Length: 377
Ligand SMILES: *Cc1c(COP(=O)(O)O)cnc(C)c1O
Image 1 (cartoon, rainbow, N blue to C red):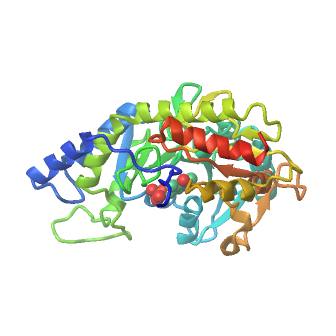
Image 2 (image 1 turned 180 degrees about the vertical axis):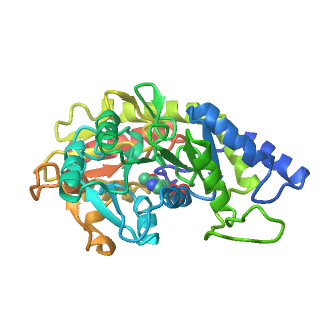
Image 3 (image 1 turned 90 degrees about the vertical axis):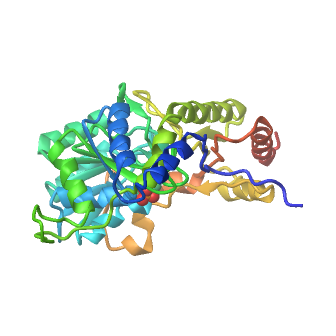
């Protein structure tokens, strides 16, 4: 018999979700609008501290609408980190705009403020800067916001992976002009699929909801002055989200516990370190990652293979966007202009460990023992 699968990060339901979904069925609100959608928006603003929210069908849809709302179109430049998931930058291409990929720094693996400065020197003022809080670790927001403010450039925060993470006590996603969250299946809370766009400007979230519902002008007949999308969240989905949100802090505590367990378990192996956390933040530790010391003969592939052997799911670090065939034509900027890239180095030497909050003590023991064995410990 095959050994039980140990997951990277899978959905964890509690029962409250079904209550809200049942309510939607009982009241016949089975549509991309309804009381759960409105309530989830309200509850997300209460939770994050953002003033306004628009519930959408995906985090990617939220990023796309953020770009549309900021008027990003053909030829416009957007500075975006290279070390991220492709969904961060795909919408830039939907709008025929031009991404310029920015290298990471070593302290948090996120967008390097130095590299960002260099991008401004090379390209002048872009139409927007998009920052990502990778694996739930807040980026260096003070430095990045300072750079953007000086040049009067809007900041978009891709907080898809960092819902519940804070920076200096404030929620990630609420620093930029627009923030986005994802409720995809493997995120810290899930609606099976979904996203949220937040802002402190009501005009922005109203515009998001307008564009997400086919951009209908205020007229009895169907009139359109802009191109719209079918990006609204459904009332069923929102019901799942409302139930999940009740357990977000609990999920965060469990994710943090997993990170601490790994850190403790590998502290005597000098070839290994954990993904760095921002000293000014409180990360949700969505995924716990390992970094292997440079020159070590035990590679991330060896560790992933050893775990795979026992039906334990792992994942490579996101392959940087500047190394993707589909983005090969776009520029990539490092902090000092050299060839050496932190993003590429992290990709080469890192891996994501199982970070599923349903992992049992036995599961954790098995994962840890398997990794330790790779180093003869
Ligand atoms: C998951 C993710 C997204 C996309 O969110 P979806 O809800 O899956 O569309 C965007 N950016 C990052 C960094 C992500 O991890």
